[in-house]
Length: 314
Ligand SMILES: *Cc1c(COP(=O)(O)O)cnc(C)c1O
Picture (cartoon, rainbow, N blue to C red):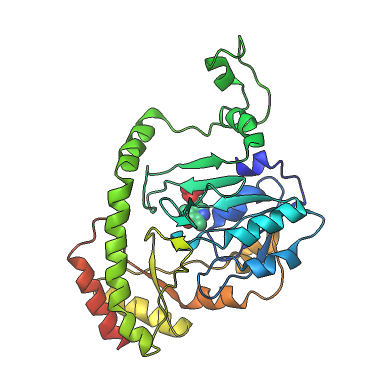
């Protein structure tokens, strides 16, 4: 929907990190857009705002900051640059529900913000998401696009006497049952977030010593960000160290996963996108990051995870 609202045409460029999920790029590629991948910051693993300006061309339409792990991108310089070059900003806040930047909720800062309620996120409805339309100029068309390109919403409000096909669109609405499930989750969003933050803090305290001993690196939180404990990850020494860790954790009964294969190095990323500058940080993080299990129901098992990890990393 965001790509439709931005009216992305064949060849239009969209600047985004390569260290993200495929959906960030797919949304624009489906409209003929070209993802232009720039590197991430070594601290937050978010798009490096200092690298964006050099990647802007005459074809650039939008910047897509991804708030990785629910830790905000540095939005002030990004918004400023977008204003200067007349670009749209679409926040990929898929992981950002209940997190904020300088007190502002993630997804509410750019022209558009995309949340995900996929089962792997903090607040879920199985599949689904929300589009936050912050730019008032886009609201009317957003209503039409989500209703299969019809003016049905205006009809329900009595603004037109019949409804008809007026634009492109698709069926972007959740059904009643999914919406009801999501409503219950939204009502619990604060306790869910609080519980996850406690679990996150346990991990963070547990791995401090190993970080001091230069055995790993823990997540870094800038003080402009209130995060939502979407993820707890560790950065290990190299690819071999990371893969050995995952194997040994598996032998101890703990399933740890890594992600992402950087999009610029994937077959579709190479076909549909291009890079701007070195993506050295992206490639290094793609090799060394491992996620530890985290979900709202994680209780006593957390100490098993911590003990297993420490045994391997000591
Ligand atoms: C989960 C995720 C998405 C995709 O969300 P869907 O609800 O599956 O569309 C996009 N971007 C990021 C960064 C994600 O983590």
